[in-house]
Length: 339
Image (cartoon, rainbow, N blue to C red):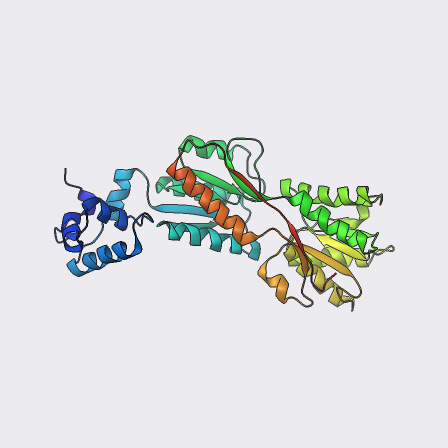
């Protein structure tokens, strides 16, 4: 049977390309689909032959034949936070190397926008999805995606119990490590800055509380300041603490962006992190190494998390029946001048 999805406007077929490149029809097909199974020199020979002959691969028709496209959707909740940008870059790199085209969508923490984006990607027969869920995403989302028959991986924010593939970090362990370090330095009034709700927030707050309890330091609710986890929220949170009667001497932050905002608040009060106040962030985004002073942080290895998520999705696409895949990165305390 003639494969209509592999003919060009000049009537050329993959058989012509195969003959010109000295390879089989199946090899040409794999190269045109971007398969990593073909050796680089062979793939280059096929591509040069196709170019020389003027052959055009009809990818849309091939997608219809396969009932899915060679595109993968990556849905990110907050690109204003460099942490998620770094995730996106590593996810995209891994998927592109595997021969896929990445379609990215930014939901801006809007659940309704996320729903519309996912429906659109479904209509385009997306081969798979990598999702950082927006705050407030229904816990039924993984089950809905499984019902659609689209392989998917959830990143960073878990969505309850289920059989879905997930990549995240040991949040409680990371914040406990940061808080214990500050306690070991002699700090007893330690603030917790940023974050509003959600599983990740609860896990990180639990790590903070556990460290205080282990050191027999009473938990003071007035030292926990909930704000949006961004620069403005971090500045606001630490400003409020510095204006209180019993000021803290240190703080751990929900994430690095919050901590960078807290650095601004210290400057507003003519204080410097490291000498006047101890401060630790969470995530280890690239900006932390260049802040003034460089920010101590909990490194959960953003690039590795993105690569793991992409790798999981590729395995799920290749073998849909494999058991559930779960990965949690181990947090590392990265000490710099801010504490």
